[in-house]
Length: 174
Image (cartoon, helix red, strand yellow):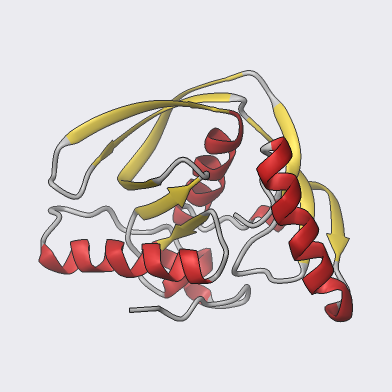
């Protein structure tokens, strides 16, 4: 089921999300619904607070396949990258954001198994952006330079961003 994505200004987006105690059938359905919502919205990441659920859950797809993270924690970050980001909860705005180049994240999966992942580049950027949502932080609070896309130009920008994402691997709609 496609869920409604809430927009900047909604109080849930400013809250620190609650940890998930145990992944049950309801949580697995939420993961499935979040993945479907992300796909139909042409996003590469989605956090539960963006669909009005204050839980520490994110889904991401950097073009290599869907990944799900429950209670994700970045335990290590190295290097630096600055790249263009956007957000499904802040439509029409893009900005350059400084992030770690490489991260190690610990989390649990949909089967309550503890996991860890080392990510770099684009995937690391997406995960950091989505974890910010879990901490009540929007990317517009971290931008080094912001860009407002006029409504009539939004479609052209989205197409260009999708092309750039495919060819250069930079985050645009996160």
